[in-house]
Structures are given as C-alpha cells and as structure tokens.
Length: 178
Image (cartoon, rainbow, N blue to C red):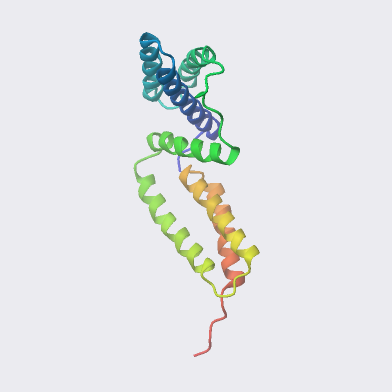
C-alpha cells in the first residue's frame, strides 16, 4: 500500500470541510451579492486545490473565517458537530482525498477485503446466544476495521480484523462429528 501522511490527509479533509461550510454560510447569509459571490468562489477554489496543498487551503480557510466572523451572532451561523459526527464527516472527506492519492488497484483490493470483513462480521453477529458484550465488541471492531480500510491504513485494518476473527474463533459453534 502507498505510504500516506495520515495527519496531512486528515487536516486537509478538515480544512476542506470547514471551507465548504463557511463558504455556504457566508454566501447564503451575507446579504451582499458581491460578498456572497466571493465566498462561493473561495469555496469552489477550496475543492479545486490539489490534494495535500495545505498552505493554499489554509489561506482560503482564513479568508472565509474573516468573512464568517463579520456575521458573528447570525442565527444561522453553523455550529461544530458533536465529536463523533465530526469524525464521521471528516472521514468521508478524507476518503475523497485518498481516492486521488492511492493507486488504481487499491479500490479493487479494498472491495475484496471489505467483502471478507463483512462476511466474518455477519457470521459472528448471527451466532445464536451471542452475549451483548461480544456483540458490542464485534460492532466496535467492525467499525474500526471499516474506518481503517476506508482510509487505506493497512496496519490498523489488520489489527482490527485480526481481533474480529479471534472473537469469531472464540465464539463459533463446535463442529459436529459426522
């Protein structure tokens, strides 16, 4: 798998999301057509920037933050989402960034690996008599593995998937003698 600077991808995705949110808010709520057009253009430029060009994206984010501060106290001003929702949003943006950075064969490999992950997750969750704690653990590990797979983080995926398989092995029914 291609080496990717995860911190830069995450920061880029976060800045891109903030630019989109700020641009949309300013364009919709400013009341000044010229300002609205400028905010919309900045938002479009933010999405056109080459992946991981943090300096250019930070400059746009700062311009939009200044525009947004001018609308301080506006009733429609966006608020930051809860931490879990924020992570989900940024993860989606990071996936979009990674699609442009990872080699073409990565998507096929990801789909094959995801099928295997889904298979073992379903086997485990549909075991009769599975206790609630194990069921929660399975969902947690499935979520971790899925996120790592989405972000192309092979080591984190491998750890979560191995733990899910171990959970399956520890709980699977005994083979009946034929």
